[in-house]
Length: 318
Image (tube, helix red, strand yellow):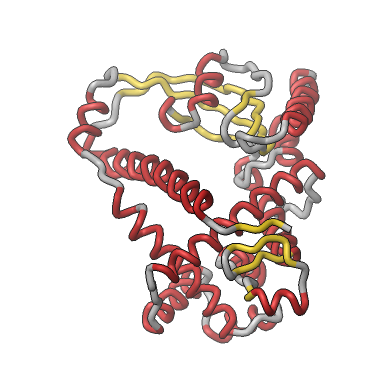
């Protein structure tokens, strides 16, 4: 398990990014972003890592899922390269002290001492020096997002409280589970059609009596399905994607939706029950409401920021 944690972290941190000259020597260049390149090997390895995380049960993802993940990975690599370039422009530097603190935090979170950590790196044919540099690059990218995005997010607590207290004094909660097939909002029509047909077939199986959890475990691409079998627990309308909650709250308990489109992909939703619950005092939910509002605005600003970086960038696809 520790070996897998380190392996996944290598690609999350952006390990493997090489210079234009180095890539030209040993790997096939797919994308050039300013003076940085993204290679075929880098795309393949990151895709494999993400698929392994989503299919931790040892299953092989279907071709549609693989292509969806590969496209997401490629997009993420381009964004990382843009942020790294921006970090250079802003002259963001990560000190050795900062790096040491982050290394200690990583080992602590993964319950590894220095010897175990170095052994895990050795198993992945990775040096401690390479890992530190990958982490340094990630921290620099984080510095860009903190300076140019997070610092621009302003949340009005009084407005949050006012909106919360304006709600009805009871809140309808829905307990549901789902099966998700990933598809980006701009996914090709053919990809969306295949996902819809797949879910329609699964819906027929469920109506015929097949076990929901079993099918979710086998076919859902929600990364949490390995632990929850698709069960989302109870949630309020504002807790989920609007398209998802609109469908879920319209269903009667014990019924299964037709395929529902959201920004994440397509879902089958089964509502298990509904409950009216008293509104929780604001003081008890203040932190979660504040965090939700911050994350929402941060996400919107980050998407706009990355879109602007791409529009102004020198990106060459090969």
